[in-house]
Image (cartoon, rainbow, N blue to C red; front, top):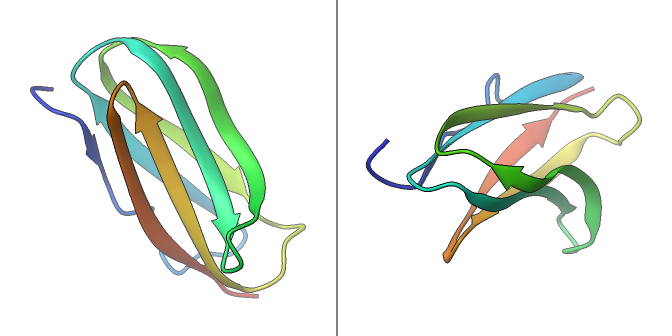
Length: 88
């Protein structure tokens, strides 16, 4: 990939699992975190070194309540936050 990009999670809305896909132009430390609407971090799906290229992580939200959540992908100097909806 020529640039950093984050795709909308799929499926969305979801129950109980969803996949978050993203692309990295450069290798480096990368984190994928999930936050509730109050801004509290509820899950860390990835945190470590990743190679350049396309990646995906799966969030199993079976132990979380229905509602709106946000996921943030950070890599290098890039950050992207997107929203997703968990239905029960």
